[in-house]
Image 1 (cartoon, rainbow, N blue to C red):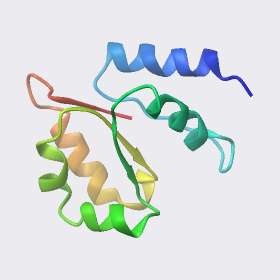
Image 2: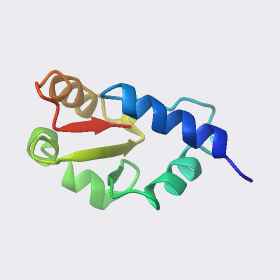
Image 3: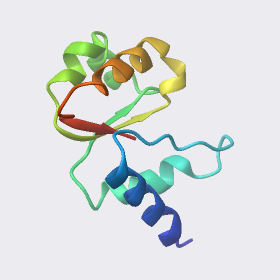
Length: 100
C-alpha cells in the first residue's frame, strides 16, 4: 500500500519541528510506515521491544546525547524514563537531533 501522503506529512513535520509523535492504534502500520522512511534516510533507530536496543538504552542520556540527525524511538511509551531524557534533549540550543 502506498503511503506517500503520510510519509510527506512526517517529513514536513520533522522539517518544522524538533520532534514528531506518530500515534495510532496497535498494528495499524506505524512501524511499517517509518521503516519505509528509514530506507530513504540515515536515521538512528531504537525498537524498545528489542533486547539489544533496550541494552543500548540502559543509560538513555549517554546513548542519545551524542547522536546527530534523526532518531526513531519505536515503543517509547514502554520506557517513560527514555521519554524524560528525550524531553530534556529537545531543549538544547541549537538542537543537534530530531526525534520521531
